[in-house]
Amino acid sequence: MKLVVIGFGQCGGRIADQFARLNKKARSHRKTEITPGVFAVNTDAADLTGLSYIRSDFRHRILIGGRKTGGHGVGKINELGAEIAREDGDKVIDAIRGTKRMYESDAFLLIASAGGGTGSGAIPVMTQYIKERYMDKPVYDLVILPFEHEEATEERAVYNSALCLKSVNSVADTVIVVDNQRYIRKDSSLRNNLSKINELIAEPFYDLLCAGEEKKAKYIGAKTLDAGDIIQTLTGWTAIGYGKAQVPMFNLPLPRKSDFRSKSAEIHKGIQAMDEALSELSINCNPVDSSRALYLLSAPSKEMNMALVKELGDYLRGLAPKATIRNGDYPREKTIVEITLILSGLSNIEKVREYYTKSTSLIPEFKKREEETESKLRSMEEAGKDIPSLL
Ligand SMILES: Nc1nc2c(ncn2[C@@H]2O[C@H](COP(=O)(O)OP(=O)(O)OP(=O)(O)O)[C@@H](O)[C@H]2O)c(=O)[nH]1
Ligand SMILES: [Mg+2]
Image 1 (tube, rainbow, N blue to C red):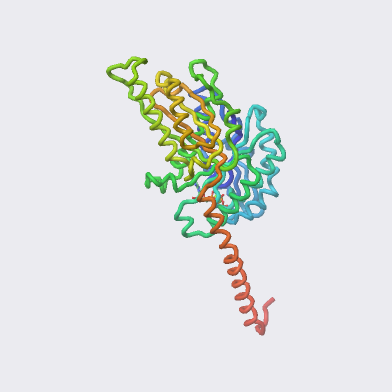
Image 2: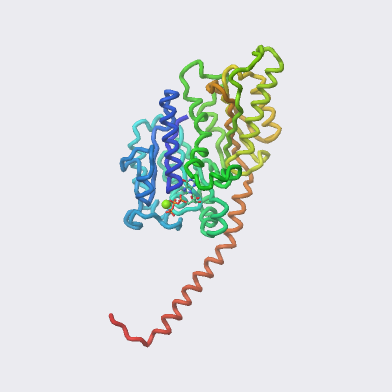
């Protein structure tokens, strides 16, 4: 599958940069292309300069809202981010039009954080613009939720997130939700390591996108997972997960393929990887709530067999009984069994519901504060009404 990737704001731009890196890796390791175009869009010129893999010309690193922000961002006001996207959206559309092999791409992937200003405001507006102009291609939005400490100290992060999530959900073909906090749950050293988190966020897409683009027979499995499977799976709220299990390089004594013990060991590895993918989902959710699911098994070809594929399918069916499940196998890796998992069409995500509830109670509070400020200002002016002016 090939995606045109567009990142908005600092977070979106940096994760899009990771996709540009993965494309480079796919080109050199797998002789294939997975992202015919990668763009970063920001109101902040310095953020655009800081990227590494996205082409550095102004058609790929697009500055918007220059007049309004002087190139310094919108300071977490996502209504302003949305307004600028409405004014400058054509710059982005023009850049996309310049993508040489646009016709090869299967879909768009737009990326932004929900809690900031530029990305959070621009992503719903641009999703709508792109959908209107490219009606034959789905538009997927990857939305990154704030860390807990940000939610605790910045009400605006919660409010922005609610606004952004509600808006993207009404226009995008799918909203893939990624919770920053989940990445430091197990490894707190990642708290100050955003670039590592960004790698982890982009990683599950690598095999997923490469699998359907393979040309060499030896890397094509019994059932290829292609763009059609992914497009049919992605709908509504979505979570993505990735898990792996190491396969020993030297299996001594060498088990024969027909040996039932070796088979059960393979199945065990597969289930272990599936369990990790489930517990490391990008957002906390219950598989029971998904209406569509997909898993890709990548493993050394000798580890792959129909029993394993069936066992994994049965296992997932037990957890997501209402979901239409699609799958594929990809005989690519040498020493690991990997599972990439998508749970889509989720009918509930607790965290999204919380943002909505909290923000609803914030609206009257914000209004009250605004009124208080205005009335204080008025009373101060009143106090100075008899002072002469120098102007
Ligand atoms: N995973 C990840 N999260 C990030 C990154 N940069 C910022 N964030 C998160 O994104 C939110 C802040 O949004 P930004 O993307 O910085 O904001 P912006 O879209 O540039 O908007 P303004 O700076 O307000 O104009 C916070 O929740 C951050 O924790 C990043 O590189 N990776
Ligand atoms: Mg910024």
